Length: 186
Image (tube, rainbow, N blue to C red; front, side):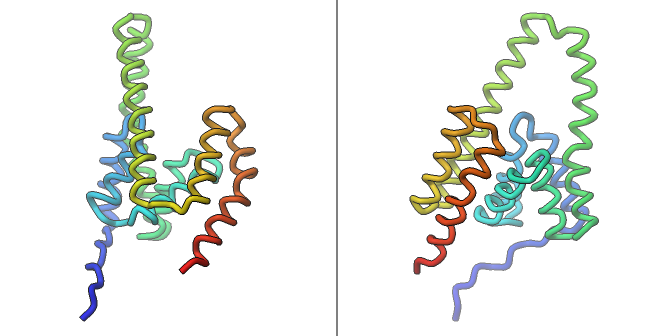
């Protein structure tokens, strides 16, 4: 008898479209946080490791990381059709809402209440991003060398304001070395 985990569910194309539609509509200010929660915790389509790897690759590619990750997840499950369905659903609903909000902002953006509302939403979004990063780090338990590379990236981009491409290309060799070293250990 083996203790193999049960097979993870594989989404249909419709499931993929509807789920990414949901992610897009509930992911205000932190779509990656919601995508992780839905894809890893609710749907169990990806493991924490798979999501972290997909998001990491999405962050080093040109373009929005959430878009890149959606394309990669869609492609993983349904090829080209999935690569089109996931980001279309993820951005379609919010695009319509954003157009409506832009019209409201044009009309009422100078009101103090509107400014306070936007500041509050921005603070909540930043908290969601930090919370997701902490949750992923806790569950993934990266080896110390990889954690050090992540902290160096945070310090370079977040504190020292080093441009993202320089941060990625500067730290990539160290990250590759740390991952290679961790994989060689039993």
